[in-house]
Length: 369
Image (cartoon, rainbow, N blue to C red):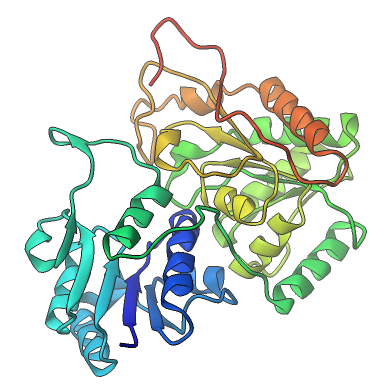
């Protein structure tokens, strides 16, 4: 029987990137005869564009579509004769849509009161009412295994289109980098709130030191809502080899291409960090309010830094204490040493060797989590 499946994909760039091992496993097991569609937020489509696992990208913003849009999605699934739905999101609505569409096999976690709508049910690990940290990659792959699909690899993977590379070529020229140059890329953005942000002055000091002491150009990555912040960081760095993408026509495709060209990516725990892993780029990841246990990957070239604080990791989008101690206290000198160590391990332009799973800085007597 030819499989006809729909995968409800996560809405955020990092989470969607961590879903790529699951998509790859489905395609490799079911083969080219299967038909697989991904239901995805508009921001996710350019992220997954040119990957080889999906036959269709169904753009669906649940918040905008409402229940009328949900019913329309159910009709579309019924018309496509979908027999399997995989729910990587934890929402009630997607499970109801699949049930209304008459999908025979509906696999997901028992969350958001939707267990009765699923045919294949997994219980997420928890202690009482508290969900225990599970890396998202493993969380998604457990669903894949639950429907009988073996998993050969947990490696994150993305693809680039020729148009993405062309956009990066233009951005390189505008920033004054040579066509074959591999600068360090610095990302201190976060679409999920201000709590993850590393202070602008820290970013600028780090970028300036990398340019002066390590002789590397630095490209400040940003999204459309972060142009001003990126421009301020570049201006504060006060070095001609530190440039921002603030003036470029920004897109997910351009961000992918820029990250793929980096000699090293320094990033908060946000989408670009996972994009770096997907392209095998050495990553220095800065953690503050988020617990790394939720987003661990098998990327050997990642070095993780965290400043333990008594109130963290809180998981908040905005600092509930309003002091941002976890990110404010992550010292520039510590991040600079991690960058130098990473570049030294990788060599001038080669891939990174295996890196420690985590580095904790200056543990306090209050303990860590």
